[in-house]
Length: 213
Image (cartoon, rainbow, N blue to C red; front, side, top):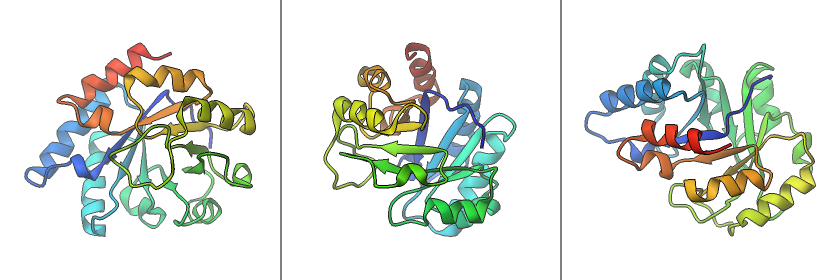
């Protein structure tokens, strides 16, 4: 689908959501992120029940209106319609991008894993809107056994992919390193801990968008 990807792609991992006052926390967070200008957000919950995922999704959708903000659900293409989300991110071992596209149709955003040390063979032929690459640096919010590729790895993957594919660099990226990652060829930086483990994630998101170009 046609979508202008922002430089900063916040990843809200369920590990930062408190058990007590969960709904109020998500509503307040969602509204503040909308006010801060977020246009793309992924919600990632690897261990929650379907009930928890859909409850969280309903709060986020209400706080982040679909006219302005695209919400992506990690892994669960089967819940996109119920959640009212705009797309899904599928990694290796999940539903394939082709199957996700078949399930969701042409107007949803589909992201998938593009590669780490090298591109996944044939991945650029997949019907995906963006390809995540990394881990760029060590990460604490997502389990991975892959070694970090660093800025030079991003540069190498861009050279291999060519100019057209949307590459989303992920894992361990901070505001100090983000510009170098973008300069190396990433279209987007995906950010979890560096935004959501701060006292004011919306203010931190604003800071990133103001400083990156």
